Amino acid sequence: MMPIDTLLRCSGWFLRRRDLLERGYTDAAIRAALADRIIFRVRQGWYSVPDAPEPAVRAVRVGGRLTSISALESYGIPVPRRPDTHIVVKATASRLRATHDRRKRLAGARDVRIHWVDRAASADSVWRVSIDDALLQVLIDEPRDIAVACASLVMHIEKWTDRRLDAIFARAPHDVRVWRALVSALDESHGETFFRLWTRDAGLLVVQQVSRRGVGRLDFQIGPHTFVEVDGGQHDPGWTATASNSWEKDHDRDTTMAIAGDRVLRFTYRQLYGDFTRILLAVCRCRADDLALTTIRNRRPYRVDARRARVRGILSRSRSRSHAQRKRRRFAMKP
Image (cartoon, rainbow, N blue to C red; front, side, top):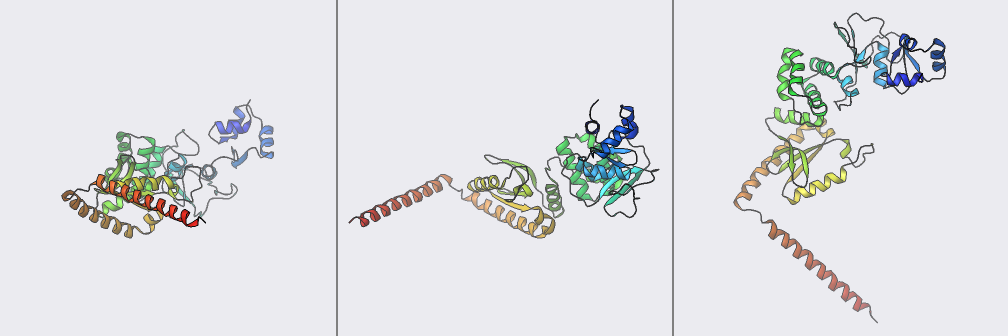
């Protein structure tokens, strides 16, 4: 018989007392594991291990399962962060408990949002709903930008087909079904979704995930030679998480783009959320300048080879002068 904590981890973090008894564990073994703090009682009759996900513990302690954005985040989908924990319970549920104390009743909690439904919970998981049900709840409750961002990220990360997403929107309220046309599987983050939607609202059309030779893919193209990158935390020089820092790589890419005559505008999430008006002004100005400069370049093509030769000549003359100066200094120092 495997250790009781191993069984809990293998069984999805949570088991009821009767489930443990059916597997051959005695009440004495359960009490011993509780005393040694190998397991703990989530709520009456439910047990888990100390390293169980905290949102999952909160949901089971209340008496329900994670849903909406909270459930999508538990599946590893980088959705926009929301302050509340979304928990779904049956319409007939009673004796709901506080998220932090199984002995207290849930009353007036500000960090929990309860969703009451009339359908029986599926048997997939005891602590979270499926991605399909979670996305449906997002479409029901959240505003347009967040709902479209979540749907786009599910399409991108989970590799959903159009038919599967269409089925979710068919179950959604009628007034949100028009958002289906705004979903894009090319969005790699909710920041990209927000930028795409907000520039669209302003009357600007952008092209997503454009590839450039020697550079790779860029988030958006807003003009013939102007591109936009929406940078998350991993693009910051102070990034210390486990994922690799792309600060140096980003600057290397920008240099390559500049050599080719292209320009990259980089905006952070702080700018995106708090100062989008200035972002829009910058985008419009750079796009107008790009169109004007492109017209001039078409009339008078830029001769790259001649420019490079000129740069090489300048560098060569500079090296020659430096060599001559060093020789003069050496002769001046001789006795």
